[in-house]
Image 1 (tube, rainbow, N blue to C red):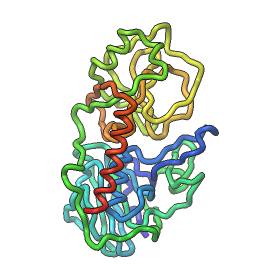
Image 2: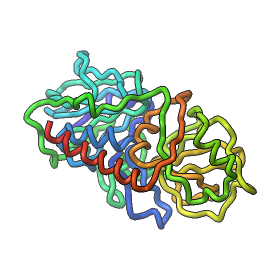
Image 3: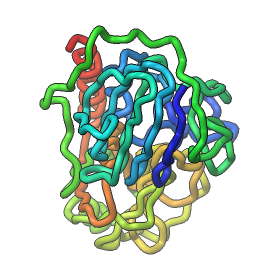
Image 4: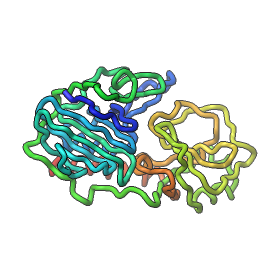
Length: 310
């Protein structure tokens, strides 16, 4: 059992998302940074889809009522175990009665806490992910609060000892983020100048961003005759461009349809880096082929397999 002493700024229970229900208007949700969350589960001895805690900007403090094995990955939130610093991107034992605490993120935006066995909350439509806008999943469909108690599951395979992810697998956060983009499906609704603007400009991450989408600020992207289309399917990674010409990148909690033209899609491995961005970070776009996107996804999956052998 895990007891919440301090919840942090926005801490929710998430897994890899709620798939198969987009046709009925249900967003996928799930973790914002799939790479960090999956690595945390790998280090903790879980399957990739086990439920974890996702902390945003300011982490929480948690007391473990029983012995546990945990892993922390993602944003560096200056974690301490009973007041002693513990390494990010690592797993370690937590004796019963111990307190694991996090502070403000000094790099990145979202930190992940995985516990061997996973967090045992009821599945809703096949997922434990929290979708706060609908009050669905996780713990009563909301962010966690002080005093909450979360059960720990029993389906993990506890490692014999703590592990630390090799540096080659640890991403760097902050500064300038390069995102690879597959153009389309409505790129014909943008002028040649508009397409050039997307790939030749730097954009700043706006403070107006959340789990639904990240608004960028910078050079105006020009449409041929306007931004509106008949609403069609939308998913994480889609780059919508409304009438003001400022791109919006859809993220985990995005709606299932949208009526603004989409100039391209950010490939899934790069969404994890974007999820760790803060207001003021800069974003640039690079055109990417479908073959390159599939190859990069395969490389990411291979890194999880290699991490299990550490």
